[in-house]
Length: 112
Image (tube, rainbow, N blue to C red):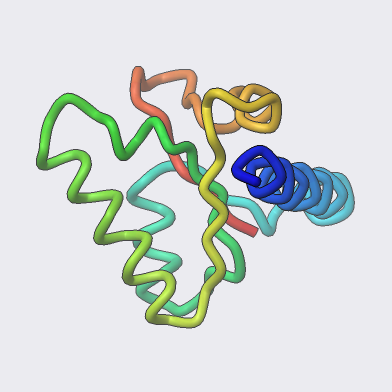
């Protein structure tokens, strides 16, 4: 039973990622990366979907973990959808070029 639930979640992650790649190729300006730009977009109620790695919720510093918990909560309260990708699943690995900012060792969210 748990395996079936995991497969369903994984299928939703794969579909969300496919939707993101399609949107990115058609309208690349709709995506933004990094905590500050995502927070700004959320303040303007401009987030339709947030794709975020579950690694962020396991950061060493409590302050960092709380930052992302609060961000996800605020996006949901504003009517946005949040897709949390498992770093352990293939879909999480496929997002890693987007979640890892070149100038930052931290993982950053993105939206579309």
